[in-house]
Image (tube, rainbow over all chains, first blue to last red; front, side, top):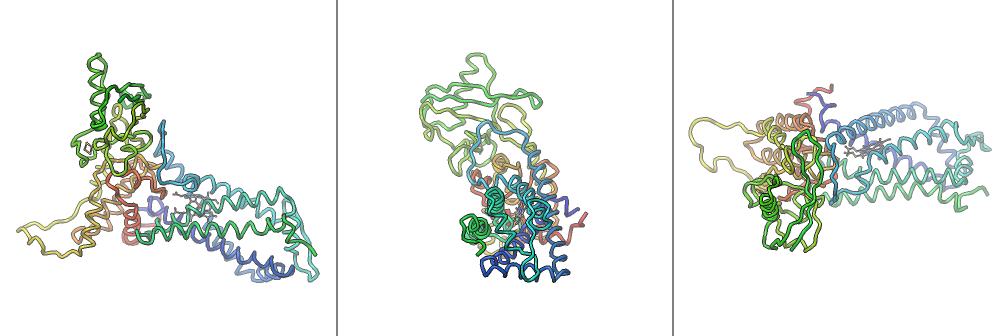
Length: 221
Length: 251
Ligand code: HEM
Ligand code: FES
């Protein structure tokens, strides 16, 4: 029998890749925090990351592979699920499912669209480019962030995307534990609440930068 | 009391069905939902019309035949209640009630409210059995089983195979049904022999019958007339993980 064709096999891949990306999101968040330290520190952090090029490329490779598998199986499973329920009820009442659980494919696709934008924006500087060098000769990440997020439009895009991530994870984290069988009646409420809490922390942590820039707290002195 | 019913009518599997309006008059609150439909059918017979076709058998909540989706919930809005055990006192005079068949690709409509649930039987056939000794009758308590394990197995064995979980699932998945059968057998020593093979065969069979994958929405547990818990699905997933390396190749 073929693992990648089984319903359980593919869900395990979704869950493992999902959790990997959650770990990545938390790592990314701790990196972002340096923006709140003195202005040069995020530049130093970015420069340090880029000096570890082997590490960075290995990291990118793992995340990109996880994401590709996750997106591929996410779309495939969703299409199969639609096919398994061809006729809708005239009247339908949901009892236990949540807005987040029913919109996984849409928040997922929104994240995919956002990731493309995010990479074009801050990694490749292909859209809304703001490229500066700071006084130590490093790429000035701090200036790039502040100048970008001073645009209400760009900030809105980022905040909306982070909301999509938070919704995806409000269901996804809890779901991945169930998929991996790490769940029983005792741990179930704890896992569900912790998943929600993690989603909220991610949401607040990530919107902090655009919100603080818009509010004028993060700015050039 | 008097009720307005919108009932799914469909003559044949390949015909397009539609909701049809019926009035249920002078319904006693003591009646069960099925008895209310019986009364509507008697009126239809009196007037020379074709009766509404629905599944039922035991009428005491143990056979799982009587599944209907009532106002958007399989078996209606009462928790842990089959349609035959749903009483009209839980409705009000003048209520509008929508009655539809269980919907899933794997459950084709045969007529009106009856669907073919043979797919569930075929999932059982693919792995829902155990090996037994031939020869003399063994002593009743020759195999010791911890009380908790026996209880869990019995809880899982409560599943009456009605298909409400499939009907409630946004993905048309039969995961709660399959998980309850797998847990029931895997919890007991007699069921361990085939456990790896069973979980693989039954999940494969579920997919091949056209059921979707579990999205962990947990609508199934909320709709289950026997209160089967989604923790059994986690158990199925653990059984699957244990079996993966024994049974599966990647591609
Ligand atoms: C980029 C585009 C993405 C798409 C199209 C996508 C799509 C999906 C879909 C459709 C599901 C539900 C699968 C099911 O119900 O069977 C899902 C589950 C999940 N996703 Fe995503 N997703 C994306 C990105 C992400 C990201 C960035 C993360 C993590 C940060 C993530 C974490 C998860 C988790 C943890 C699950 C739960 C897995 C499970 O049910 O066991 N997803 N995703
Ligand atoms: S008719 Fe048997 S459970 Fe309702």
